[in-house]
Picture: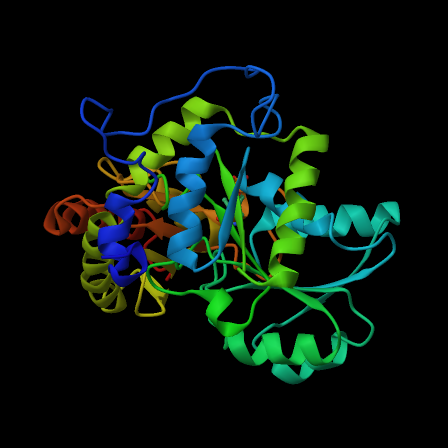
Length: 366
Ligand SMILES: *Cc1c(COP(=O)(O)O)cnc(C)c1O
């Protein structure tokens, strides 16, 4: 039975291991070495590491291409932006992960690239902005507005305009969306989030198709990783391999919890809007009482962790506009909920008491 016949829920468990041999290790070893005995395929550890290969085999297979692990999600973003020629144009969503929006704006200001921010849900606006562009950046669902786009349709528009397409697949994970199958050239992940899943490390990855242009992009980004030195620590990658083994069950539980919580939040009097695309485990809510009301809710939970980041086993919440650099497309009273794998009744009880507390503190402010 070849690995590609197996379902993704099986491959997260089976891939990235060494061939079985009597007495051999069941798990891929953590290789801590800065250099290797001469005359092998890799001679220095900035160019490769067997623990990286384990993780790359898993993420590559899940996305249907070749993986490359980097030191963080932003390092993965940077490896993609290095594909854009100096002065080239990037078309990106106005509301997306703030690190991407900020780095694009800063690079545009420095003159190394130019950027056109568009509402990516407006395909006409995207098409217009693509004129002469080098790269289309897609994020779907977006962080934190949870906008979902037709990745294949936008990709076709970009390719017609001669632009490469990158898609940040952090929120959906390859279990729910495989952008390479929609024609996307590079998939980007913050491995920090769902793929590793335990809020204990930072890592990123890019994945490219197994065809001639895809392999060429992979080689350029591998070279970028090696020469810029944005390499992943082997321990973090080993932990990510261990974390990804449970991706399917973690996501299944967190998704099921999210469906229940999103429905209950819809009817809570302190909640003015619920954004939930119906899949995945991020739910964004807007609450009564503006930014202050949202702060009161976010600081009143006991079980939900008040912290930035997402995709871990523990439920977490944050008023996003706390972060400097968060795009103004994010409402000031928006709280992003990263739903974890705890018991859903415990999660609801805590969230409901936080929402009730906040409402009590501001009578008539709804
Ligand atoms: C967190 C995040 C990133 C950045 O990843 P880091 O691992 O924090 O560098 C990129 N895109 C999305 C959608 C994210 O949520």
